[in-house]
Image 1 (cartoon, helix red, strand yellow):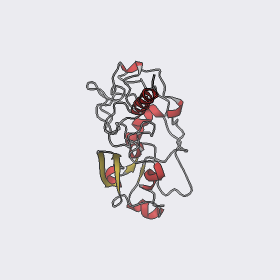
Image 2 (cartoon, helix red, strand yellow):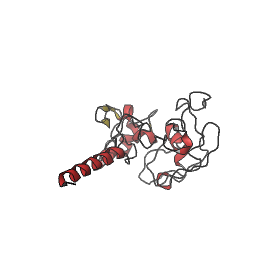
Image 3 (cartoon, helix red, strand yellow):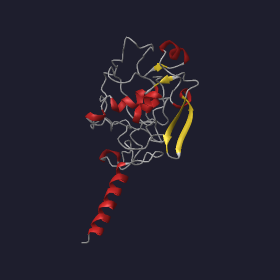
Image 4 (cartoon, rainbow, N blue to C red):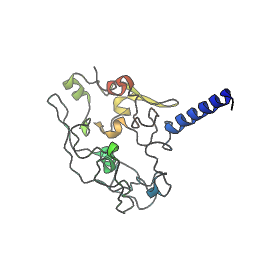
Length: 218
């Protein structure tokens, strides 16, 4: 085989590898939350979290909720320099933790108890002292008291990448009910993310600490 043919095949192979490693922002297909390749999903992407019928109507923070929720009480982040009042995770954070705290199987949905636990690399556990705090109100008063946070009512941020972006205040783009939660930084549906698989479905590019500097005035 000629050298040019070998090189061409190598280039094509490299491109295909890159394509398979990326999940374009704007679609859950191919992202870390695409469960269609898992044996327990029946080839379906959404079923672990959502269902069209017989949904859990007690969950107001997610439509048509289908997954068993964790009842864990979490050890919270604390620091002598922390000005925020951190409470138990709420809203979207609690839904994320229904898989990521490792107390409930990822395939516990539809009223059936599953047996497949989340991988060790994606497990946060119930001790959240080593994770960014969630469940606290982030407002102008906190920014003023802290002195190193941007005012979320005036500071703007762009989330997403490519043609799938949105720009607005921190309050509008990142906060939920005025609170910092897991989904402040992560977009579980990969709609407005930086797009690359392996980056944790983050909404803002983590390189150069851009995602940190969106809120932290350093």
